[in-house]
Image 1 (cartoon, rainbow, N blue to C red):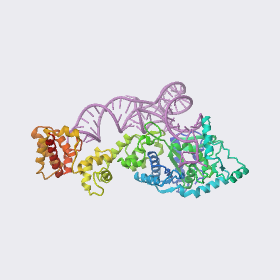
Image 2 (cartoon, chains in turn green, purple):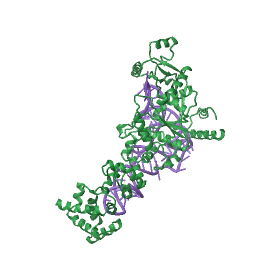
Image 3 (cartoon, rainbow, N blue to C red):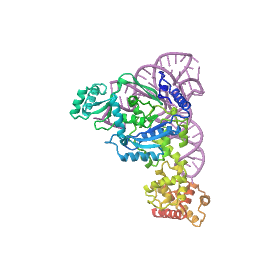
Length: 517
RNA sequence: GUCCCCAUCGUCUAGCCCGGCCUAGGACAUUGCCCUUUCAAGGCAGUAACGCGGGUUCGAAUCCCGCUGGGGACGCCA
């Protein structure tokens, strides 16, 4: 296996078109297969969230692309928790992130690893850099640095670190140590030449090294920082492809130099375009729900959310709806776009309705239970005939866009009684319909086969007898049965509600009209 | 201020690499019609986009340059 697989990709100094670049990458993989006696590159990717908040839409999309890329290539997907910021990271957030990943079925192969468990590893690498002259102690205080940054910005200058501790003499250094100043440790960034990021989405992105500053890799309290730990972990975990948000593109040249200082080959990168809110700024709480679990609570199906998220930046011709298997089969970075995407809740809602239509009623019955409890339609632990519930759900599938809506429509099937919508009552429960409702009730009373088809026969007989349209009978019945004017076909509704409750509700409607007048 | 990224309907996108099959396709939303016991679902039709300016070329959404616009990054955050 060649030591520097990257040289194959970076030797050419022309700007490669992306797709050509891609072909080279594929050739490279084939090359490995051919030249390594059956061994071929095992793709290893990771999702590395910081537990300073819930799993949000953007993070979930990043996780999803990592997952799909790994599965498509029979590689490994690793979950790593980046919690070196101990002041903001919490275990609760670690749990909710894991919960979100599980809900979306983004199964990982290794981990979750926590960076806080790996501090000795980072310490070793820091010592190595220090010993080899690639890092140095910095005695500037955060306050001083903040002050200088402000000044530079005010003067319209770059807020880059001025490097004043970079070349301290041994004497100066030990003088500071005697003063018991706790130093941070900075990485010595090359100041000449360029760093080239090899990106699967954007091609080669060139940065001038003199733009880069000596970043802090270890805080004065001895904890390591992100740009350092991310490289150490990716090296340690043999990550071959770093797939993450666009907002990290600017960090990448710095990380590349750390890879080099560590003597490790550089992975391939994929910087995904951002997800924006309706105002085209970075998606945040201001734009509505951003946490994945909030969508669960709003009655979205995980597969619908996954399907929506994948289409933010990725496409496969004109296809909109994908099974998980199709996603894995079709996913490549060749079809990932470069432009940021606006999160559109309406399209997500449409996809969700499509997924509800496609689902088995039995599956929906399971999924809707918590929502029924939440809405107080059934009590916790209350027994409910699943077969009957599935039948009821079947009539509602194409009418409910979320599980919340589904639960709420289920109310008139399950509850003992219904409450009338005022407008519906005024429009349909009147003197004219009273006789029809009463007649229907009488016709239904002796009926033993309470099925939709035999109910239809009875309805049609009444309609014909009076020379009216079916709607003239159906709408008042609908109000009597559901309290409102919208429902599945009236015969199905009656069949599912059942004879006993149907008669009761018809009776109540007739009485309501009498009482009302 | 500096650096980086991006640019097709209101939104997600196809087409761009390899210029002509583009009178720019699909989807969401929206409007109208059909179906219909209501509401949906479904079907059909409509409105709607290559940011601007220069090149290159017989020919540019597609290649090149500039501009404009948008986004992101510049932490002892990740």
